Length: 390
Image 1: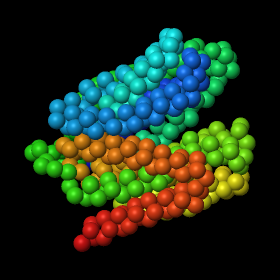
Image 2: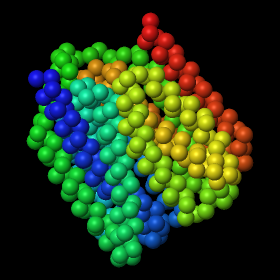
Image 3: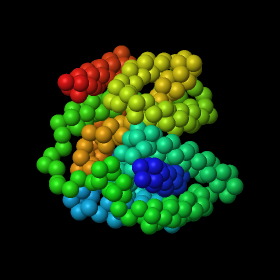
Image 4: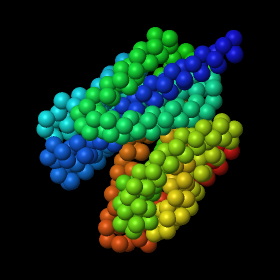
């Protein structure tokens, strides 16, 4: 019985991983062209930046509402389906946009879809992960997710090479979009109530509140993310200092994404063995990566991107797994919603401040900001670990 339960849980993890693979192919493929497409439609650099920035923030902030709604209504599959439909079908619809305002609206719709489905999906995934190991399940999910994120832009590069037309390229993304919804339908049909996969079953009585450990963990995550340099700033630095030639900057990002995918698996295994202690790698590697990334040395840039990719893999796998390990099952979507909203806000504020310091050539202050945030994150994590030992 135990073996069959674990196998069933693994099948659900695999199905949701396949859903994420095709979904990421769809919207990450589109995101590799959105900036250029908006420019072609007449949007200026400021408008393009605002659309990208506000879309990202909106996509994270709305997850707070989506998580609460999922837990209060219990409609996890409903929100997941609605989110994926908006998320992936708005992408090929970009082919019909004749004005930048229409394209911007579709970009916001795509981000809204991701916001709606992420807390509910992660909550359902966490039920299966209780059987398989939280770290490994979220690690495998992130690996498949990243595979899609790599394949999507490659598909767009091939489509542009073949047809030299943005609209035709967007239409090709209808194929992975349909595959996303097909895989999701199979997952829903096979596991209509994934809460039953939870070890011991889902919580019967409603939990009063999220545990204090979650709020301490949230503070750690916020500091860790705020001081993590965004790739857009790194790409700007690589170009400005010529530490990497222009054609190598996308290659550096691709390398980081590949390392992210591999690191997520390793981190997941370590998390299941060592627990929250594994999260120490996030602030420590960020501290090591920052001075390498902001030099003008090519070797430093490449090594820094390797470390940057490992941290991204940890953020997308074990930082999600940790939430499942410390929250009751009936409040998990709420917890994921709060976490994602805080993550997005910390990313926006930290990235904005680092960009402000960079523009004013305050490189010492920028590195100091990274150091202070990561040291605070490390102290908060060590404090949380000591509390758990008592």
